[in-house]
Image (cartoon, rainbow, N blue to C red; front, side, top):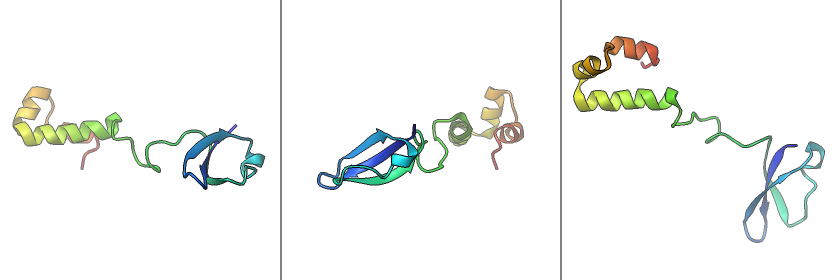
Length: 91
């Protein structure tokens, strides 16, 4: 059963209710549908999760490269800058 979000017109408070799809607009008069969505949303609307490795590792590599330099990063990691960029799809 999908989860739907409603807003109380008087207080502005948002609540979530599990309802069958056919009853999603059948709610008390003081509630207004806000977002009809199945399940819980990801962070943002289709935005990548910044804590996921595909986002966090390239960012960390760039920061580290700025901090210690490209040659030192390559020495410490054991991979060349070109290899790291290829593996993590950094442009």
